[in-house]
Image (cartoon, rainbow, N blue to C red; front, side, top):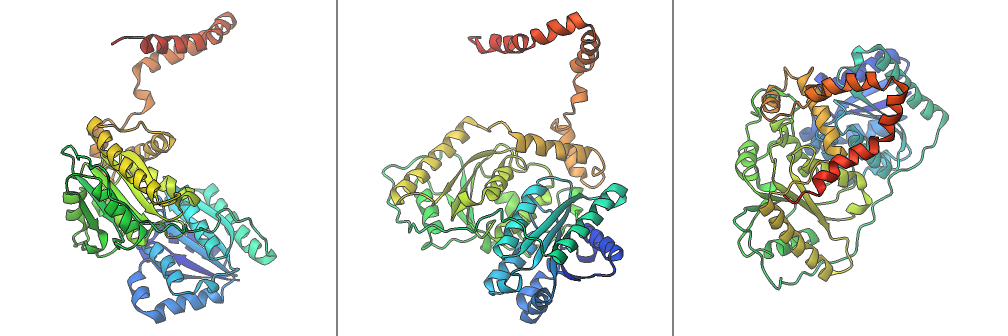
Amino acid sequence: MKITVLNGSPKGELSITLQYVHFLQNKFSQHELKVFHVSQRIKKIEEDEKAFREIIEEIRSSDGILWAFGVFVLAAPSQYMRFVELIFERGVEDAFKGKYAAVLTSSIHFFDHTAHNYMRAVCEDLNMIYADGLSLYLQDLTDKSRREDLIAFAENFFEAIEKRFTTARLFKPLTFINLVYEPSLPKKKISTKGRNVVVLTDAFDSNSNLGKMINRFKQSFAEEIEVIDLNEINIRGGCLGCMRCGYDYKCVQKDGFTDFYNSRVVTTDIIVFAGEVRGPYLSSKWKEFYDRAFFWNHTPSLAGKQLGYIISGPLSRTQNLIQILEASSTTRQDANHADIVTDECGNSADLDALLQSFAERLVSFAEKEYVRPQNFLGVGGHKVFRDNIWGRLRMIWQADHRYYKKHGKYDFPQKELKLWIANPIMMALTKIPMFRKKFYANLTKFSSGRLKKIAERKD
């Protein structure tokens, strides 16, 4: 059986995920697993049509495709997304049609599910048959039980190909809206109240819906706000995954991104990200921005800011992307996820009203320094970061460790002295039947009673 492995790590042969692939190559030597380092060689693949076609022809002659990569900022690396874009731009989707697909990733299990959702949606857009996906921790190859899981994953993949299994499609094809936005001038303009506002975009075409939405949003303000086109920033390429920034937030790539991000993004009060839906994500340029901003590691560089999105395209049909955008604001940044405005509305007047209200709410939130408390995405994500940075990753992400210590991010429950004392006492007392009966009978009343006293206070 012939399997084409598309390695999505920019580290090529040094990829952690690729070591899992090598393990499978050794275990299943009866099958051919041919590896292409598409992320590491993305510039060559973009510029050299022959290099690109070589990969596509291998795919055409393969029985299955294994998409293998490390999770970068809630999804696949930007270089990998660029390769996916090239497939559609160059019209070679037919090479993937009917092929069996599997996805193998490594990460610290931080939003690995959104990365897998993204990749499954890509496979389904290519009319592939999605066989299976496996998300492993960075060091799982050292664990015997995880190695057994990896073997079972590969066996399931090969069996699906051999027996021609069929699987359900979970992500529907995107249906793009027909609204041609014709904005009108605002009846009133609002003040930024001294807050600086920046719109970041990857496609500032004034004739597109997105360009018109950006202009209409800009016109909502009495003061001039800045619109920055990412294509005009000196960015050499995506994140290399080298982790050298882990010591002191310094990126090894010598281009203009670090200075741009620190001087024009981090210093801004209100940041609006504007982009177009491209399949199950935005553009690879946007992913490049998010990946390169990771030189701030797991430290929130935009804490307390107001973040919002202006999106053109069928965002409501890709819930995974909505979760990624929310998590990009809250879980990673400790910022306020203000809202998302899309052009999926009835008419231009409705969109005018949405953009005007969006502008007003952003300023109001900034005035109040409002940051919505975290939900599960934020709370759970924080604990994944906290435990890994305190534990086995501390020696790598030393800048994070210093920040977490200083800002009380190491909020382990065992540090709560009252609970240390109360828990063993109460657990011992509840072994007494009569006490246990009264304890649980009055538990709800006791819990709500304490809160009721606070709720009724006049101060």
